[in-house]
Length: 282
Image 1 (cartoon, rainbow, N blue to C red):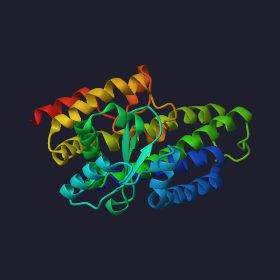
Image 2 (tube, rainbow, N blue to C red):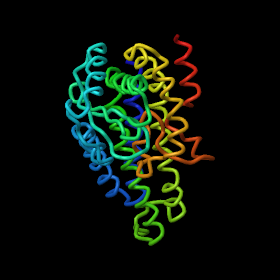
Image 3 (cartoon, rainbow, N blue to C red):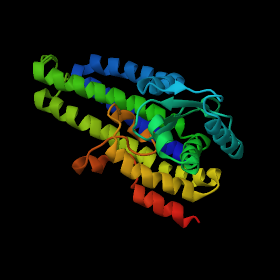
Image 4 (cartoon, one colour):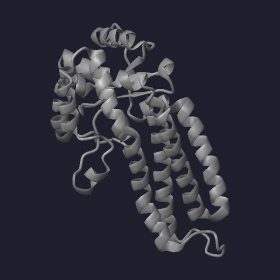
């Protein structure tokens, strides 16, 4: 119940922030539009989160005849987790990564990249799939999908605020319509950061839990630990060039490249610490 309440507060915060951005850009009428927009985003993320994210990355379903080992691994671990068999998708591209999505275990999808399947051996793929199935079992997938959708909406509004400030398109006659060009530019800068901070609060603790649960489902924590070691190197060498920051928290490792200040807003705990915790389970 604690995590569910925390998630409710965090997602409510994203919605409130979205409404405030609407007020900043368009005054009271903008606030109403943003509130409606937030409601639509919440409904869309609940009913269509899997379709939205899968389409974003060009993921394609694979049949059991095309990927018998994947099906065998997922079926075995899903039974162990006492959840329905998820649908399996493959994402084109060399960047190694994976995520799970869907609104509940009955509608879950597990997606892996072609690059991950080429990089990992059988046991490492099993460790990665165990992690993603743990997110399904722990009911993280809806939380992550809703956060991704709302964070994406905030980033869209941040861009609108930026261009509104540049072209002076927001109203200056209404006292409540905004805080001026400087305020709009500041909001355009901090909105994506606020969205990422909320994502980080949602995902970091859940990643440790998914690692632990996934290691148990796979049968050996070394499977996932070894996979994470490879991912730590390969994800920097082959970044996912089309990765959307709003969905970064859904992947097993951060798909975004970059260092410096970007590392302060990482949506994932340090891989080294994840590996250490896994190996302490043995």
